[in-house]
Amino acid sequence: MRLSEISGFNFADCIGNGALLTATKGDGTLNTMTVSWGQSGCLWNREVCTVYVRPQRYTFEFCESENATLTLSFFGNERKDTLNFCGTKSGRDVDKIKACDLKYTLKNGACIFEDAKITLVLKKLYDDNLRAECFTDSAPLSNYKNGDFHRAYTCEIIDVIIK
Ligand SMILES: Cc1cc2nc3c(=O)[nH]c(=O)nc-3n(C[C@H](O)[C@H](O)[C@H](O)COP(=O)(O)O)c2cc1C
Image 1 (cartoon, helix red, strand yellow):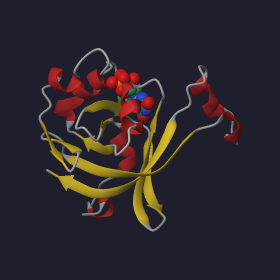
Image 2 (spheres, protein in one colour; image 1 turned 30 degrees about the vertical axis):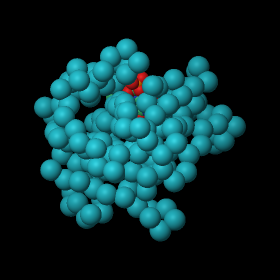
Image 3 (tube, rainbow, N blue to C red; image 1 turned 90 degrees about the vertical axis):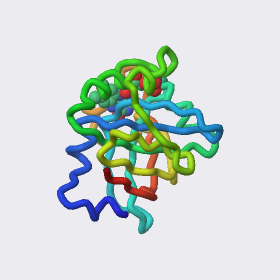
Image 4 (cartoon, rainbow, N blue to C red; image 1 turned 90 degrees about the horizontal axis):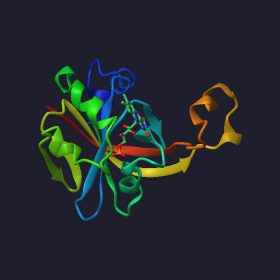
């Protein structure tokens, strides 16, 4: 299924409310974190989305690993606490999936949470770090006082799973 086939789905609204970005390494280990910045659209004749991960996130290591598989999971209000938890705790310190009692299956390496309303299965196509010299408006640079520029991952949405 394609994302554009889900009537009424607004990517900006949904990710703006928080979603879980989960990256699985080739060996099946995974980590998840809350994201609220990203966009979706059409690029290279594919349906894509871009998510933004700062280098200090533990999830970054997983996104960078060879053969990483990413998913973006959208939940209902009942998982608000989970999104807060996964957006404030690091997988370096706590097993967030266990702490939040998130049940999941791996489908070809992609983490599908049982409670997610919508899961986007992502295939990395292109990534690069944002760079200070490329900003044409300086206002957003205030997000990078520590120089920790996000890495932008543009991914093909290869599957959409709706619960
Ligand atoms: C609502 C919300 C949205 C967030 N969005 C992002 C984001 O888009 N990119 C990012 O790098 N961090 C984002 N974060 C911060 C990470 O989720 C947070 O640092 C998390 O603890 C990282 O976990 P990790 O170290 O296990 O990867 C967000 C946090 C919250 C609470």
